[in-house]
Image 1 (cartoon, rainbow, N blue to C red):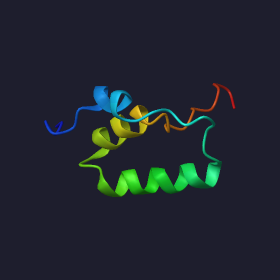
Image 2: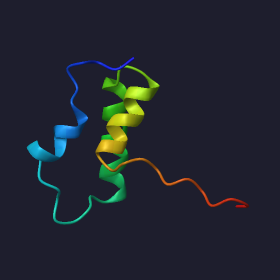
Image 3: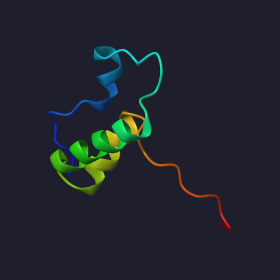
Length: 62
């Protein structure tokens, strides 16, 4: 269930992308904050995806 107040497509219009990506420690803290405020699993996934913070899946066979 998606909250109608969240407009993920407009995040790019509101926030500029950082010049360089945050280090791994900062990314982990941001993931925890997003997860703690997400409305559910799908909401968390959408927010992390919009922020470019979804962990990359391991290659098949590893």
